[in-house]
Length: 161
Length: 139
Image (cartoon, rainbow over all chains, first blue to last red; front, side, top):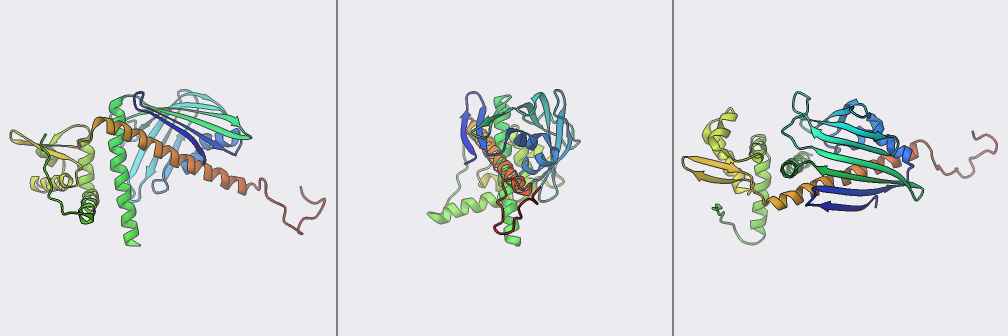
């Protein structure tokens, strides 16, 4: 029941998601602001994230990699465009190549996250926008392929167990 | 548009067969890599073959497995066989948003679980244990 609404706008390539937490704003902000907490929720359990750089200031950024079940690594980065602790964060979210540098061939999304006090807890509003339709389609393909590869990996683990 | 028809059996066995083909197709590193390469546009089998340390025939076999699973289409143009992944564009856009939604829903669930964990760890709202509390010593 944490996610209270989701809106998907195909024409504007935008996902808007609203979630309510019982924890106070400052506590929810820490999930983003503390790299050790960020790596506990950013990646799926089978692809845990390791955060390397973490600088939530305008022009600063985050670099991380996720490690898959076969030891394969997928790198990613954020570039921070604006930050207002403890209530707002805007950044571009992208992928890195094997050299750890941003990969310009991969899709990016622009993310705006806001936290406000709500009913004694916190409301988090998240808007994620694909920068181009081409990138959106590219991510769909990757998601499909990665998602299915993941499913296959889980099946393998089940069969091996 | 020529779609290479696959003669399916009937009923549940046909659906099982399709799922088997899909999982079989995806259970191989080279085939997953071929899929990723063909996302960006169509590639000829010979271009693909040049990318792997294996024979043209071996790569062609991988492409055939992907094609039977419905993951790529193959089209002959002149002397070349062109391979591409080919879902409908609008479906892909919707799918991208669906992917993004499920990624963020999963993240929100993990955030929520983390907040619950730390709530317990710090003892916030911990109920007093009956009969074990001594007045004046809590601090």
